[in-house]
Image (cartoon, rainbow, N blue to C red; front, top):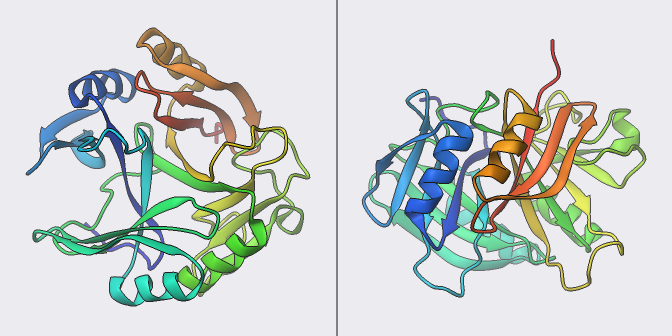
Length: 266
């Protein structure tokens, strides 16, 4: 399994009240199979390749949510930059056996994300294919502080929507306030982007917190939405077309939010 580029999204997991119910939901929705981990979690596989993990919540106060992890070659240095750049470290680096080292943090707007320094486990074995992770973006009300934070912490090079001249992977409208992130050393733009930043507008309730939304590629967006609803999930944003395909935002049967994206036909 190849190593991930510095600061690239390399893993996702979801914290759920009922692990077995989660396996039933995502197993049917994405065709995932599962293998038990060393603790109260299960690795999810698509075509026999690692794509995500499902974990049983150990504390009922924890949110039921999908989390994304960014690759780092030096997790201690990245944690230090998070503190220096106005973020909050939630969990200091902790070793996960021989798999690697992880930490959790929040940006200045409060959106939570993870860090992963790989050991034997690098991260995704499959991505950008049906049944696997394909994109992530942060939603925030504090865009100026958050933009500076991710550029300082991860070295992202940014391209705003109007600069890139493209549509936005997370909205049906053009002209929105959206920024794409590309890894350091690349030319910023949609061809190199690994994630993005959107803005929570006044159209949403003031109590809505900042958050990351992760996307999974699917072969048929509309069919995936129908399957999710049949399995007890809910639709937060019904299917709509964007320049990068057709997408929808869903909640699973335990209220964890995620998006599905059907790439355009080539």
